[in-house]
Image (cartoon, rainbow, N blue to C red; front, side):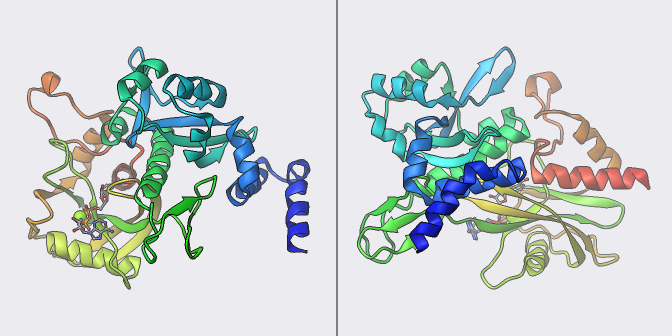
Amino acid sequence: MYLLLRNLKRLALPSSCRFISNYVSRMRHLFDLKENDEACRKALSSGSFLLFHSLSPLMQKTENKYTVPFVTASELYRILRKLGQKEKYLEESVLLGCTDSYLAQFALDLGIMEKAKAESLLQGTFVDLRKAFLLLDGKNAQMLSQAQALLRWHNTHLYCSKTGHPMQKNVSGSRRICSSNGTIYYPQMSPVIITLVSDGTRCLLARQEAFPSGMYSALAGFCDIGETVEQAVHREVAEEVGLEVSSSKYAASQHWPFPNSSLMIASHAMVQPGQIKITLNQFELEDARWFGAEELAEALRRERMPSKKEMGTIPFWIPPPWTIAHQLIKEWTQQKQLC
Ligand SMILES: NC(=O)c1ccc[n+]([C@@H]2O[C@H](COP(=O)([O-])OP(=O)(O)OC[C@H]3O[C@@H](n4cnc5c(N)ncnc54)[C@H](O)[C@@H]3O)[C@@H](O)[C@H]2O)c1
Ligand SMILES: [Mg+2]
């Protein structure tokens, strides 16, 4: 009975697209691809692919613009053959989404193949993701973030942590299954808070030693087990800059692939009145400062990381426009300038 209902549901999907919105029908189509290995295997042969090598995405440069190409299945078959791989290697792919016309989109890592040869066949370069993030716009960056996080999760979950036996991925890559006892594992994300602390007239930005020179961002930190998002905001601000938050308000969220896979939960926070003296936690941060709306408005006007050669020294700058840190800073600055 269950199988009959399942098959009826599957059969109903394409025709039901006439009655429901494109978004809803695409989500139902993707659900089917995640659950049904055969349907997903079929979708591989007509899909398009984002390619990685050892978790670095393929990028192509045309004039001054960097793009992240989607390679068609037929092109990929041709390239795999030239790299000495069988078509079956396509099943190492993970499902990312689908286009408005229901063509499935996947990501595949060519890490076991010769990098220079793959780059030459694909007429592109595999670029470290942190570097790629500074060169791309939001839509591309979000897709790469999802793709790399999913590929990384599969790459680091080859064995069942309970039995030690190998695990197999389902075709879409939405889960892995222990070959010994059938335990199912799903890709995981860590919740991370990011908060823009304000004293009412200025807001606080900080930098870690590992940040690119001159870049400051909002305070961020991993949630501890058992904590609420609000408690994590309170604790992180206290830990990192020695201030006590009096209130916080949710703003937005963003997937972030570093260091593994995080769900960034963003908020605006206020400190207790009069509490503005920063006590830096030097294990975590190199510097933290209060910035005024004018200084931030100027940083927002700069499109990209400033070049050393142009400027002599690197001025203060903030993360790229599509990052959630940038969005928080922009929201805060716009609100201050309206006052
Ligand atoms: N998208 C954005 O706009 C944006 C802006 C700022 C920071 N971030 C990201 O936020 C994340 C967290 O910021 P942070 O580094 O200040 O965090 P943090 O202040 O919690 O400090 C990091 C330390 O926390 C510990 N930790 C606890 N749980 C962890 C887990 N699940 N994974 C890894 N480490 C864990 C480790 O010791 C690590 O060194 C970073 O990955 C950073 O890239 C994103
Ligand atoms: Mg931190």
